Image (cartoon, rainbow, N blue to C red; front, side, top):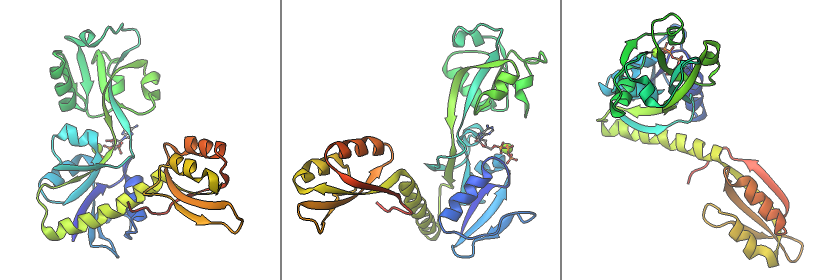
Length: 283
Ligand code: ATP
Ligand code: MG
């Protein structure tokens, strides 16, 4: 049995649950129950405050966890980072009152900066040779400049509208963060095997989301050009059509190149192009 910690409720919760459900893992959601077992996979799920997850993982109380990279870095704990999960994206930035002129990091010299991310800020300032006073605040950091408690803040930004509403402006992005999968350093072979099975499923889902299945008809005499346009998994499947001189080409395209490739295919004589989402993809 592998033990996984996820956030009990909050910004990481829905996507963490969706990730597991998409991997075909069935379990009941927490209400007052803070641990549950999946009914069809050897996984126990523990629901915790996100702040506690890195420590539980590092100490081996749980084997793996899903948490924001910001929390892992701030706690300076969390075991091994296995993979980035692509959700709960945010950034940690320094912001100043709009009235204060910003002329680069030197502006922060000797200033008071309020934050709940003391360690990340401390490392950043030290690395850049800035000495400033760090004021630790556990929440509502944005109001501290207007209360005269600080000269600047260091906090999570997602859209920036909270900063704006508090008369602040973002001047330095210190960290880009997203949810990550972390693991305790030493897993037994049995647990490692379950983890490998879980990650195989996560990979298949991620790959599927990043690709599209494509089907098209091409005149035989253009086939070579068309095959070169398509950067397929290995090489595309080519099947003869009932109509002489035409073939059907099947392949898979990465979402990043997908529109460009479609345009080129069309320009090179492809017809009847169909694009479909993929359910799962194993490379
Ligand atoms: P908990 O009760 O578990 O301690 P919390 O209040 O500390 O929860 P949330 O606000 O749920 O935490 O945020 C969890 C994580 O979601 C953050 O640490 C961060 O990684 C990520 N996140 C993404 N966007 C935002 C945002 N706009 N504001 C805050 N966190 C965000
Ligand atoms: Mg928290």
